[in-house]
Amino acid sequence: MNKKLFGLLSVLVLVSLMLTACGSPAPAVTEAPAAEVPAATEAPAATEASANEAVTLKVYLLDYTPDTIAWLKSEINPAFEAAHPGVTVEITEGTWSGWDTTFSGFFAAGEGPDIINLGSEMNTLYGESLADMDSYLGEGAWDEIKNFGPALENAKYEGKLRGLPIFTAPRYVFCRTDLMEAAGWTKGTPQSFADWTAFAKQASKIDSATNSLTQQALVPVDAASMADWQWWLLVYYSIGGQLYKEDGTPNFDSPEALAATQFLLDMRQATYGEAVNAVGALPTGQGSVIDVDDATGKDNGAVCLAHSGWAAPAFDRPVWEKVSIDPFYGDPNNFPNSKPVVLAFNDWLAVADYSPNKELAAEWLKMAFTKEANNKWNETMGLIPARNDSQYGYVVESEQLKREAELASQYGVGFAGIKESAKLSTIMQDALGKLITEELTPEEVVFKIQEEYVAALGE
Image 1 (tube, rainbow, N blue to C red):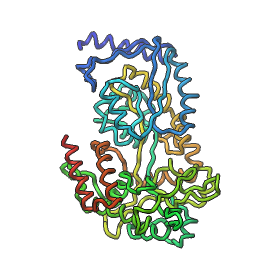
Image 2: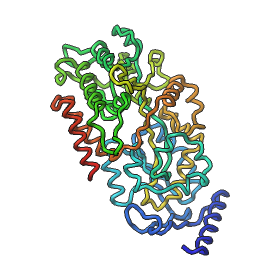
Image 3: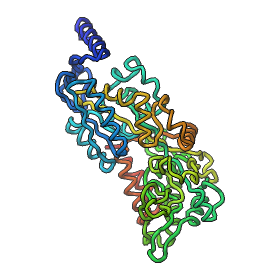
């Protein structure tokens, strides 16, 4: 690009920004040629839509509360549409079930939502298909970016911003202290593998008439199988496990991987008893598994819950007077590198590289991620805002959130940076499923994961 053309484009961009600041519609801005910034689909670079044209900005969100969606539709979207005449914001609600197929379809087709809700580990998975947003949201382009905390790293690929993080949602261990005491357990939240299995035997209850659980000592993400891959990762990290060796190859053939796998099996057997695969799972109640069902007045059945605050009771529930919040402590008796861990997840919104509306997408993100908006967004979910300056109001007024924020700061371990995470989760869930049905031994499970994950990365 010659210097005169570059200078002309610079002047146009400055005029565009000045007009936008005054509330006037911005003129069209043309994306750089594909030869300079190659699109993931290798399609010709699209032209940014003018605010004078009828444009639909599409936002794809996953599993948010009705309050969150209602707030976005009643406050954020109308304000954005008023500031950008001719633009309509369309929110599509999806689910984390089958997300990989859905997202892969968008990127393979080279069309779909402009803004996509991604999980922590997906920056490495889809990074090459996401737009470089530094020129819109990075330092020097948007002063507000300095207010985001460590979660911002999850919204980057190869050092470039691809969107913005919404919240930090670490996995904690929530325990009903009254149910612990009723079960005769006086040690508080278990802090070793041996204590956890002893606690599982002591605090779990099986109704002999129905041969099903009526009280489960620990619900780790997945109540029925107790073998969710994210739960495995939390256990693994807590005893010093690393997903990759120094040469970058998978590390599932390590002593820590075998110990984490054995622990998951031990906990399931301790919970379900000798006839482990013949006992019915804990019935589903209303609300959190550690809360009380308002319809029946009975406990929902879990003594402890290993999950994010999303799955915990609402902060205004009376049950919080009897709930403790702790990290998962690992197994220091057998693994000296054990440490307390809360595995931190950071959902974020990314801009697809195929989007013809990157500048509009950036403007919507700026509006949805102001200090006040990031606070409100997370208040609808009871989670910790990604912006440091948004952690006020309900965050500091809640003893629960204050405790969670302290633990996250002290013991947080990120979930990002997992290579081919969709493939790994599929491989692990298949292997762990065979573990809890005792089709495979723990040794066979880690061998299977190692072998298949190495092959997946080789592909």
